[in-house]
Structure formats: structure tokens, C-alpha cells
Image (cartoon, rainbow, N blue to C red; front, side, top):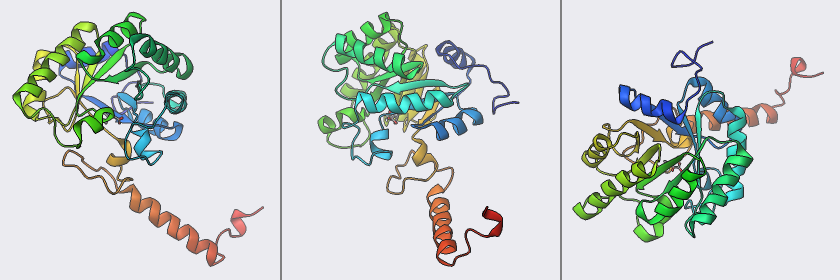
Length: 272
Ligand code: KIV
């Protein structure tokens, strides 16, 4: 049986580096539960991110800040059980790595040990240098995340495009280079100008994965609920919606209610 890529060869961090070198784009989506992860994996997605966006789309919070390490491990464990091929990366949640590098290492070891995930993702550059190094030195693959980093939303104040000014753009490029030097296997670039993402991508050997960062990056990531049209109130310019599952689910639910009320469901064939 074949996947979208015609193979079930497992995705590794090394394979992602090869993909960048060969010019093969990387497809990444979020997932937070077994059923969704199984569908995405069977469809041939390269990387599944157990994102802390679970805080928004699964738990209904306004930000990613409330989700805990235990919650993330719960979601990651469900995803890992479903996956045969994709690389599973787990967001290290707010408050579980910023304190110091020992705390970061403890949190990441818990994620890897308890969920069986393959890698972790942390937001920030030079500010989390020690934590990134410590986690990497324990043999845990780390993905960086620069640009709009939602865990810092109260510092930014808005979800608008980051690094439009030269100073912030320079810092982002130097943070990206630092993450590569430390040993990260990739970096997410969120909501930054396309020309800056292109420069970062050209300057790095490790792959860049964009979300609202234009086309000149090594791969793309979207939140699966946004991409499938389940969320309704979030329609940023960078989002391409591939389905309207909100309408599909709503219509199915309406028909289900109608059939029950009209005593059409269940019929004889659906009964024992
Ligand atoms: O949590 C998340 O879904 C993310 C992506 C937006 C990159 O970090």
C-alpha cells in the first residue's frame, strides 16, 4: 500500500535535511488526537506537530498560555499511537522551559519518555539558548520557532506580522543562525515578511517551515482545524482552507437530529 509519497519510509530529522538539500518541500500539519493523526499519517503528511494551539482549538482558550505539560503529553501520546510514518514533534508549553535549562530538560524528557514522540519544539532564540543546548545534549531533537511566537503574545500585544523593521529582522536572522549552530534540526517561521523568510531559508542548512512566511521556505505548516474549515472565526491571509468541515459536520448533525425527531432513525435494519 502506498502513501501520497509512494512510500511508508519513516520520516526522520535527517530525512528532513535531505529533503531541503534536494529541494523537496516538507508538508506539516498539527494534530492533537488519535483519529485525526491516523488520517493525516495515512495521507502521507511528513511531520505532525502536536501544537500548543490545542489550547485554542481543542480547549477553547484565547491563547496558548494555559495549556500544561500534562495536557501536551496526553495529546502527544494519542497522536504517537496513530502514526506509522510521520515525524511527531511536540510543542513544549509555556511555563515549562523558560525558567532554566534544568526545567527545560526535565519537561522535554517527560514529553519524550511518556508520549514516545520524536522531537520537541520551543519558541524563541538567544533567550532560550541554554535550554535548547541542554535539551539537545540529552539527545532530544529540537525544532525552533521564530517570528510570531504565540507564547509571547502579551509581550507583542497583537497577532500582526513580526520582523517588518530592520532591527527585529536582523535579530530573527541571527537567532535562526544560532539555533542552527546549537544543533536544531529545523525552525518554524511564523508570520514574517516573505523576503525575510527567503533570506533565512537561503542562509540555513536546516529546513525552515513557514506559516504566513511566503513560498520561499522549505515547508509549510497549518493548524489542521483551520485548514479543514472547522474553525470559523479565524481567517488570516496566509490560510488556505481545503475543506468546509464546519458545514459538513453541522449538516450531518442537523440531519441526525431530524431523523431522530421524525422517528426515522433507527430503522429495522439498524436494530437487533
Ligand atoms: O501550536 C501550533 O500550532 C504552532 C504552529 C502554528 C506552528 O506552533
